[in-house]
Amino acid sequence: MKKSFIAVAVVASVASLALAACSSGGSGGSGGDKASTRACVILPDSASSPRWENGDRPALAKAFKDAGFDADIQNAQGDTGKYATIAQQELTKGCGVMVLVDYNGAATAVTQKAQKQGIPVIAYDRPITTGDASDPKMLADYYVSFDNVKVGELEGQSIVDGLKAAGKDAATAKVVYMGGDPTDGNAKLFHDGAVKAMSAAGIKPAAEPVGIWDGQKSATNFEQALTSLGGQVDAVWVANDTNAAGVITILDKNHLTVPVSGQDASTAGLQNVLLGKQTSTVYKPFKLEADAASKLAIELLKGKKPSVADSLYGKPFIAVTPILITADKVQQVIDGGDAKASDICTAEVQAACAKYGVK
Image 1 (cartoon, rainbow, N blue to C red):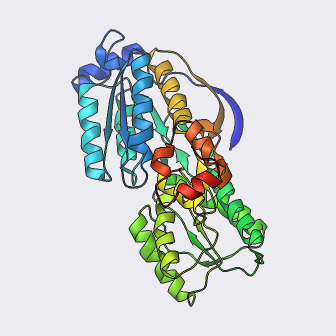
Image 2 (image 1 turned 180 degrees about the horizontal axis):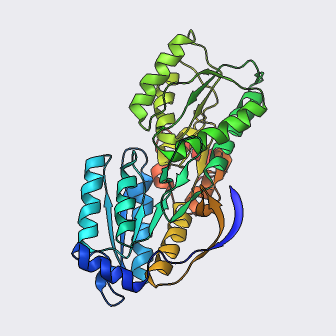
Image 3 (image 1 turned 45 degrees about the horizontal axis):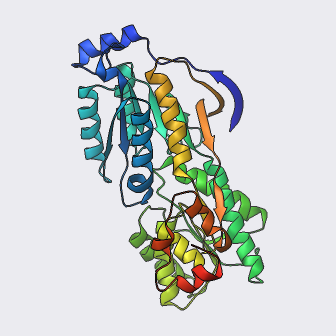
């Protein structure tokens, strides 16, 4: 992450937005046009994480409503074709700003189309980039996310600490790497951060299946990796809780308990942490990310010129700090309003909840 102070002007003037409205049947618009005060948001899916519908949607909707702006928030449900259709519908109705969570590259064309109409684009949570993967360039005008390299570092260090607690030599331990979908720009950042922490301790991957954001497919991929290792594994770096849940089903099936990482602080992930099946999860307070993105979007809708202190991939970047959650820190997620004890502390988990003071 390159540190620099960047004062960024709004992508287009009111006049150019008005011109875009004339040429696109209502996209953009003048300051008095309702379209120019509408935030258009596209979420990626519901399968990769419960956060999108349970956390981000209500937080974003509330922020825009409280500020007096309309918001059109839709979910592509893991379908790139639907993503494009939603974008076209939103642009036709008119947008003053677009907040896009990329899904398998679908946000690239949408970003380019919006920018041609003079509409600023905020890449939310996942980067929207062009160019070679080794040297990506941010296509969106702004990027708001968690410090995703730090997320990976926290996960990787959790694996290092878990191996140490188990009395395992990191340099000789059999560690399987279960990353996210490589088409997701954040997956590389998670991976890079995790590898940085693990390699510093001497860890090398014993197996590394192709990354995916899918719990069931992760279970299948991990089972194949475990078979290739003769049924022996000392730890599993996993990029998120959903994939970790899939991995844990295979570990349970083989009566194995080893350090397993994750992120999102999902209900299932927190339960696995409390039960000792998952070493930790990385908590990303969605409301903080949503607040940062909506604040930036609202400034743009008001015609202001946001100033952003950091940059990533050549564009202004607002980074939110993630938090490592172990069993003794689960209550922190509940106190933050991103989980409920009543959901976590089911019959199977009640004893663990009592042990760690979860209420």
